[in-house]
Amino acid sequence: MNDAISVAPVADAATAQALLEQLDRTAQHWQTPCGDATIVWRGWGSGPAVLLVHGGAGSWRHWVRNLAALSGHYMVIAPDLPGLGDSARAPDPISADSVAAFVGQGLDAVLGPDAPIHVAGFSFGGVIAGVVAANAGDRVRSLTLIGTGGLGPPNRAVELVRVRDKTGAERLAAHRDNLLRMMLADTANVDALALEIQEQNTARARLNSGVMWMSRALHDALPRVRGHVHGFWGEHEMADRAMLDVRMALLREARPDVTIEVIPHAGHWVFYEAAQDFNTALLRILAT
Image (cartoon, rainbow, N blue to C red; front, side, top):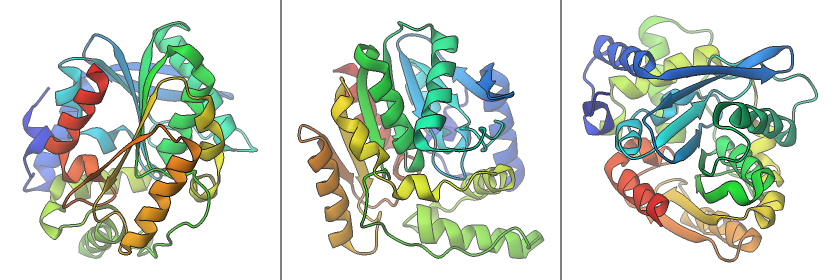
């Protein structure tokens, strides 16, 4: 695995595409049932298992700057959630519970039903990760939630630029604008890799996860999670710090023993924008 993808900015689209293709080639691949079709899983490394659950309109690519650091110590497993990335859409009606059930069944098939697991989820993926962890019982060693949804209102609203009707430079500019509105705090961090990930994820997204993000599904599941629970937000997750404080309070309400960290100088996609700080913090959590 190319360690440079963990920390270094990428200057051009061709290099970004090559790095993503290399990561895909070096992964183990599995497919598990999702109704009449499949969820696609990728894995790297060996050792204790860590499940990484990407965010809305995302895929395994959300984690590219974390895979090298984590897979040096752990078996890192990253599914594409149903209706996103390479995975089929789940059968209707779709809910956090139904998506989590397919992910949990797939996890059992990949690892075995009794294997211990650390779980981490980002944004919409935090909702699914929390329900998966709640359903997995004593197997779960830790649950890490990053910029998570599923805590109930109030929820922030971000108006994004429409991308699907654009091509070429106009489409690239829309991706850049959306990354700065929703995902990243610093324009210097909108590199060619972030733009390529945004393009590949957007082109494959067939699920609107907004209703699940805005629900209380995670809030309701957290009391059933057996392992330690940790929350992460970027300092610039939201324009209004008061709203960030409200979100952290909702997490503490659902799980009073939670440990929360705010990483400076980072936005929503904190584990991309502040990869070194996040990787150090997550490795510390996984080791305890």
